[in-house]
Image 1 (cartoon, rainbow over the protein chains, first blue to last red):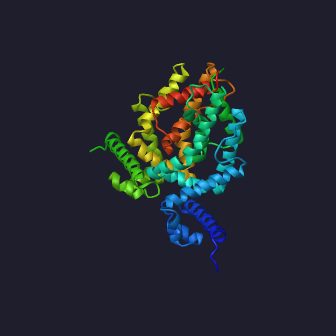
Image 2: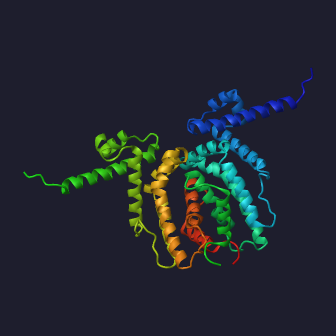
Length: 204
Length: 204
């Protein structure tokens, strides 16, 4: 029999890959980052340890990709591309829509439990924290930078504003309420953040 | 000899109390919250375990008071009362001054190391997180609420603004940069946050 390439093997790989992502996310949520091991991920995913090491060099790498995949799925489920913030020309509306989708994601247990475990580890483990911020969080924040720059071009944001700081006025409050449970999270709340950030809290 | 009350005993108690605070903060920074025990705090402080249980009912209680004490000392070292934000009549200047003092505190290792350990635990341990937010963080946030209300009285903040949300526009970005290391922290940065929050990023 002539050995045929790809289709079956690709499907098998894809299935293993998904099982490994799911196992890694479930484990980190259950036992925390320090106690999550490549062995345990392999056992739970029903694959050999070597399968994991063929594709990734460490548990941090597996988790990084598992989270990238999760974020991409969440973006698609929310009906928007994972790599851009909509630009309808109405900045307030676009930011509110994306933040509402983020609210949905933050309260979804599939996302919340592993994300909390990873965020907690990142607070005390500087190397891991910096890697995950650089590869996961910052690329998402840069989407806001791009959207705010486009708003500067159309005059909806002042030209002297630093977009990288400005985005934190609505992103960071939501992040802190979620991470530290300092207050309830809702669409009303994120809509209000956008209005305050755009127009300021001082009288106009 | 007639037993004389207080002075010596009070001094001794005060010294033990300080040693216990210092031991609790050092330990939580070194080994994390889960591995910090009342036994280890007692041993490091050079007191008996019963001394600790005479004053506190759990390690969470010891740590809570140790952090309250640390925050109070930091506020006094920064030259302001720990229970109010200055009200000179100039809202922007007052907020900038308090946030600059907070920057100093956040980068001081005596504060940073134990605070990170506790914050990380609060992210995954909901009960502890909620207790520390309620007793440590929220009372500090309420000082901003009071200052913003006073600014509403003098017309420096719009009457329809919710002060509890508004304060997050400058407090949460600093908190996230510190907690998640998403960017550098400086006086320029916190000054900018205050300006953006007060006047908005849209043209006036």
